[in-house]
Length: 410
Image (spheres, one colour):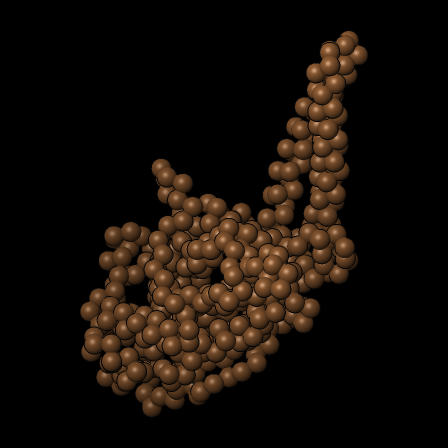
């Protein structure tokens, strides 16, 4: 959630920044609903105070005047409390749909305004006609989309043989790398409650993209970011506990209804996929440097694997809903072009405000909201595609990078 104090004190600036993220968001309506809600709340508080004063007077004896006044106030109070409840519901619905305030340096526009800030490595040059990952994996027996469709439905995958080995080797490789960068291992539940998704900013805006259970109030995680954000919900860190850095390898589940295109077949976009996440809680003044660390940690994996990639600073409308600034790391896939394998974001105090995640200032001893940051490190299926297509051999086999062989599956 955005800081309402900032919106009230400097509405024109904040509204202008919000429209960098979402030009259609009714920011002025949010400001109006906030004012209306505060006015009703003042009136309700005033009537409650009058009611309490009458109750004290009645202790000395109930008069007709006190009785009539009490009835009048009680009626007004019930009406206003009903109005307050409706106003609060309307405000909360809009407030929770408000995106984070982006940094002023973020470019205006969508994908077309993203700016490439770094490129690393070279695109592979083949002396033969290369195959795509679907052709390679099918011939090698690494995965089976038809079997997955029989078991569950379309846009799922069943890994087999060396395909399974590669997934596990990549996960272990990533976790070890992230530990070396100071991120502690976490294995969270794969299911969360509604409050967890609200704190992480997935609800209410993206509720239709999450898988829900039929008979229990639980949801499958769309990313480990949800679990890691809520690990410290309603928590107060001591200053020397920060930064707190976590990494997690989980399956992720996304409905993504209607988002599949003809080019996004195979492992490019599936409903269930493996991903290693990195996550940080920091003091506000440290979050900019922490985002650089997260980007460096994620891209370090691609360097070790010898893959060509680029890093882009996203424009406002391409940044994620809770993000104030995002860098995307896109790996080169010979048959597809550049594809995102990591999105690294500084969410400032947006999620922390929803989850009341704070730290105690060592000077003033007052509590302040932390900043939260996250990054994919990395999304395994797309990385697997890049590896397969980049390191394919003329005979259709895959040359596994040496850095992965130490994990004992080859």
